[in-house]
Structure formats: structure tokens, C-alpha cells
Length: 455
Image (cartoon, rainbow, N blue to C red; front, side):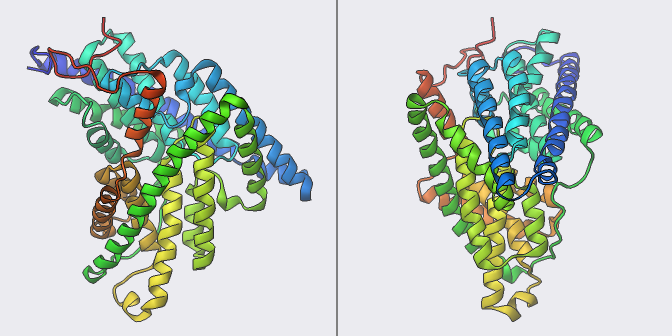
């Protein structure tokens, strides 16, 4: 029997998996093209530099990013306001039955505005849009096959998981994301769980077919000795505090820009666009999603002061870019910020205890890799997702134990400091602005959140 009290027959299971496969394929198409187009468009500053130089290059770059930002904000506000930002809170709210995904609007707006915003150089990740587009693609599949109720909710979550897999080529992290991040909303049964697997497999395969298959961040790191675990625990404690500060800053900036929007609707997007565009020329490491930045700083390993300055700059540009309201995620910016801090921590430890550092098989890159999972955990509060995501991204499986240690401490410190998961805060804010009661209405027959799409 399923959650609705109906027999869960092999035929019903097979049909559900087929629909999930279709949802995954659609997600892979949109996610793969999204990734491919951003990779092509983000090269525009190099093209511009071949035609102009000096202050004219800085001014032209600032104007291009400003125009792209305003266009993305206008498109989002005019046609699908819920497509702004990450999209993960919208998916969680839709699974819980307190939000409605208008896929006819969200999918094209998220796709076009997301490419424009991320491709213009903003410090935004592509995973938020692909998760939202994945949920939208799943709803297309449910409409085609006439799926309703609990199964529709489950497929929405499966499509979102496939979207994460497309963004990072990280299918196992995507499965865990559905189970861990949406654990309060996901209608868990054998059938729905297998549907998540099916959608993730299909989405990853299709995305790899379109945009290629590879670890996103192939970083070289050795195996750390057991004696180094306290050092990674200390790193986790530091990043637990940084994660709380990052979440606090995001939420405060969203409130500030919302108040500013009432007086001058496009003033903040214009200002941020101009600054980000100028930084693309003056200090390119401080902007863009950050995947390339991680690979670069891991290869050249700047000094501690340079890394801390870069971390401070990327903290500000991350929060500012997200607060404009364009489509874009925070996963990639969090990973880049964490890499800067982790590398700086590693270099500091190496300077303080050089013999012990080399004796334990450590490198600064080891701390950079572990830091990515720890900061993700402190902000999102999904430690299993953080560990597996970083392992799949970097192929650094030898660091699994240090990564688990850092994520444990980061999660505890964030909890003790009063921090709350970022997506939960965003969803509460969205519901408050929409005037929706935050207590989810539950279906008496399933115990799940009522589905607004269910007749």
C-alpha cells in the first residue's frame, strides 16, 4: 500500500519509473543546454578585451553586465517573480503544498534570465536554476501522463534532484539532496524513491551527452593522516560561524533590497551590475560563479593575505549578486568562498607547523576541498549532501573522513550559534511576503501537504 492507501502494484511502480525517466530526460535537455550556453556566453569579456582596452574596457564591461542584469530582473519580475533567486525554496514549498510551480512561466524565464544573469558575470550558481527547471520539467511529464496527487509531488522532487545532478555531474549527491533537504516534504515510498533514482540517472546521462562528462573540479589532494582530524575539526568550527554569517547576510540583504525596490525598482540591480561588470576586468577572481576560480587558486595557491582578501570580496559579491533578484543559485558561490578560506587555513597551518604538516600528508588543497563541504553544511544544513557533492565534484574520496569530521563540527557550531538552514529561511520569507500561513495543511488521507494542483 502507498501513502494514499492504494495498492502499490508492480505495474504502478513501472509506470511511475517511466514517467520519472521522462522527467529526467527533459531535465537533462534543459540542464545540459543551460550549462553549455553559459560556458559559451561567459567568454564575452575576452571577446570584448580584443576590441577595446583601458578604461573603455572597464566601462564597456560594466555597461554590458548592468544591461544584462536589468534585462534579467525585468524578465523575472514581469513574467514569473517566483523564478528569481535559487528556486530551491519554491520547490520545497511546492512539495509541501504551499507554493505552486507555474512551469509554463518558470521554465522559460528561469532558462533565459538565468543564462543572461550568470553569463554576465554575477556570482551565482547554475544549480538553483537547474533544480527549479528540473521540477518544472517533471510537471510537464506529469501533465503528459496525467499524474496527480502524491505521485505528482514525488516527481516534482525527483525532477529537482535531476536538476542538481545536471548542474554538477553529481548524481549521488542529487539523490541525497531529495532525501535530506526535502525530508519533511518528500512522500517517501519504495516507488517514489526509485523514481528519484530514475530521474537522476536519466537527467545526468542526458546532460553529459550534451555538455560532456568529467569531474567538475578535479583537484589533486593526498590522503590525510588520522592525526590531522583535529585540524579539520577546527576548520569546521570556523566555517560553521562563517555559514551562519553568510545566511544572515543573505537574508538581511534581501530585506534591504526589497525596501529599496519600493522606492527605486531598478536602482540596486543597476548598481550591482555596474560593479560586477567592472570587476570582471579589474579583479576577475572576485566575480562569476566560482568553479574556474577554485581550480585556479588551487593550482597557483596565492598567499594567505590574498586568499582572505579574495574571500572577503567574494562574500560581498555573492550576497550582492543574489540580492538583485535574478535567477541564480548559491551552491557554487559557497564552494568558491569556502575554497578560499580553506586554502588560507591550510597555508596558515603549514606555516605554523611545517614538519607535522608534511608528515601527516597534508596540503593546503586538502583543506580547500574539505572546506567546501563544511561551509555548504553550515549554510544549507544538509551534511550528507555536502560530503558526497564535494567527493563527486573533486574525486577526492581519500578525504572522506576529514570531510565528515569538518561537516559534523560545522553543523554543530552553526546550530549552537542559532543559525538556521538558508532555504528554510527563504521559504518562510516568501510565504510571509505572500501572506500565506506557514503551517502546512495536511491531507487527512496521506498525511502529506495538500497539493494545490490536485483536483
